[in-house]
Length: 331
Image 1 (cartoon, rainbow, N blue to C red):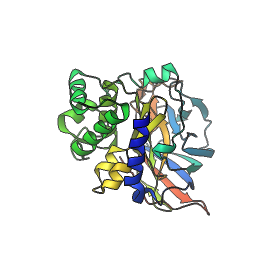
Image 2: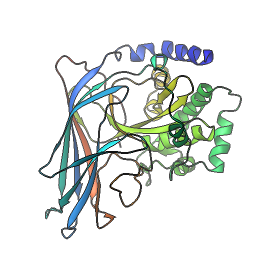
Image 3: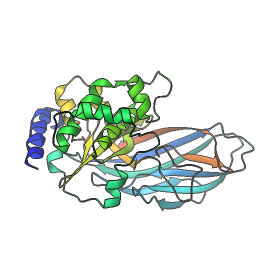
Image 4: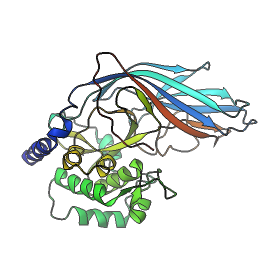
């Protein structure tokens, strides 16, 4: 592990100017708003699943409230511990439904050298090594990953090489159709996409090297009070004896500052809030198919998805909290 701590210290020194203002917690009140349009008037009763933020190691979540006249039941997904709520709602005649979830969050910066050691369960590690429908482990992904990590021996060195490859090779682009699904094979084909595409590629390449890796999704936070129009995602990889290490290759790709690029391998400023983790999520009660990822509401009728969803997050800093510089790309 000595090699890990040497690298962690080097990254910290390089990135110190970028994270100097990001070492305190940020406390905020937020409202997640999901708007579902194009619901058929004859849809009958809708089954709706909505994601809920939950406390994780870098964030606290309290006072979660759903602003709705309907009865919601809360559940916890089994593989990743994601929290969500489910309701049955009559289809609105106007064809539009709005669901709001308010909560208070406290988010702290994550520094690689301060990550507390954890020992995941065998099933948690196995899940973080397994392919997903769009996060593939195809022969060409394995071949590419072998080329990227050639000469590297430690988990951290291999993950850093993969991070640098994704950061410098992928182009952040939301103009070419097909972006935003988190499709590794598409990322290999056109080397472009949004944060979900960047991090699907990172996860596939890491898993191909037997490095456990997983997908995290939520929202970036604005500077001070403000509104964010949609999601942001990042990834984590596991180092034995150390824990889960965050990376944000898509944000890094948008910066020309070497300190920012170095910082976003292993470190995260408190400018984001996490909602859910994982891909191919199996919920109970079951959706008609596993969810590719879970940040949008899922709306179904008679076992078929309906409607078109859009998202936003309204944020208001709590008095006495710290305003942190904005960051994080959005969908």
